[in-house]
Length: 131
Image (tube, rainbow, N blue to C red; front, side, top):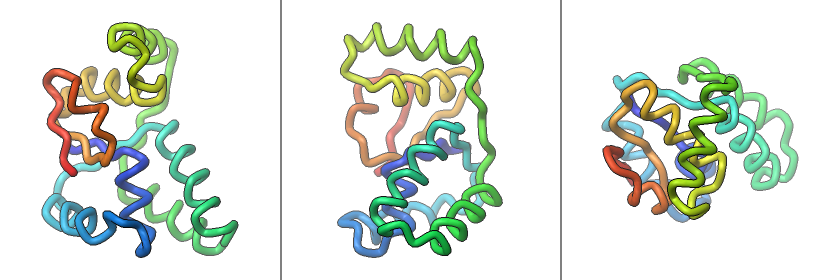
């Protein structure tokens, strides 16, 4: 299993992103791994893509469908919200609450790796950031 962060997904789908080639290579090397995201990651990703694709609805729909077909989506609930807030506090607010939710999901489901360009995950014990 591998958890995907917004920064990774956006770079995967946007050819002009600085890290696009590197992200595509990582994607190819991990193609057989089960890919996990949260509903918050999906929301953040679609919002970022709307900006980067200048509202190109057709492209956004295609990417949305690709994500839905490729990834298992974990939906936030009260327990995960509480755990994410505890993580947010633990890391002295240096992780966003959304990133803290990612950490809570990763720990709950015993996911070892996160594909992310966000270096803030490097400070989290027991998570290997692939970038």
